Length: 463
Image (cartoon, rainbow, N blue to C red; front, side):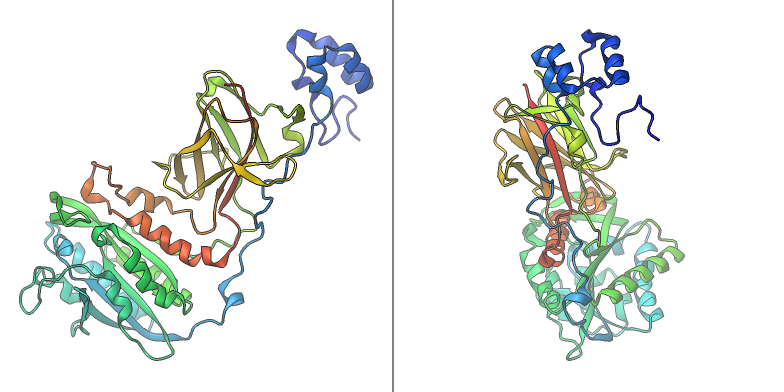
């Protein structure tokens, strides 16, 4: 039986809403004697009456107009592609890869190449290797991928011609008819002029046939010149340079081979590799807002009821929203999908999220005038968004939406080198984030599933 001193489940806590000036006696009297709400309102000033007039009105569901269920798995969408036994390996033969073969610690590069061969053979598949560059696929190479241990593979000597990067060439190689090939591109993924369009267009040939994709990344010892996407040297000397295997093909094969190569590398003393499958997450509901704070914190009050068009709204009736009042001196707010937060990778808005205002009556999205996303942080599977709010922004309901396929992995963000970055140039890859998120939108976004996140906030702007 419920304790009569406690409010019924789901009821508003009136005590939290009354001003302290009323004194504990009034609150206690109300709680114990169960006086009518109407009588209490008659006794209190008009400014207080709205605070005790009930739990408040209901805002539109945060997912209004959006899909809420998980996307269908590939097997439920299309007929699964036929799987072959051949693995087409393309090794980027351009000069930007030379530093791996002439690194001061020369043992990592050949062990990495051996791990590729071994991982493929352990799964009963047949590796067929090519040297990729200048729009040509040279091969098959007689000694498989191990020829790339020789610096001549990248300099252009002993039978090899110097070539420029042309990563999409791997996807022009024909395979066994009616079989969807498993392809592995070994590269630093520095795309010429930061133009990922040609590479993604080449990969689409297989994606249309039902291919999935995945990427394995590591930082390997590198000695020499690091080139930017415009062909200019941006770093000289020793560094740990990002190195990748970008794989496409039948989903289970991609996942199996990348994980087997990772295991083999670990056994050969090459730890700290990252593997990401570029595929939908079969969740039943998008990530939502679990925490809100003002900027600065002292100039805002979170978890408070607010007034929109003279109607009261509160957290009790709107569990899908975070509530906040921005006072004078506040410049914005921060939303995140987790109450507990570990430091992630933060970047000024990079275009993965949409900000909109929701009509409190119809739920229709409207422009979020006076507000803009300033920064985004990824921490594991969670997201944090910073929003600038100026004095012109209207009090109301707002939503941040990250569409299906738009949320990147944290390590893609950490290893990406934006054009404005001047730190640790050799340890990052320009265009990595753009390439991987573009591929993810191609694969995941095409399924038209629910968004990755829908973060709603009820805002009272008193700035």
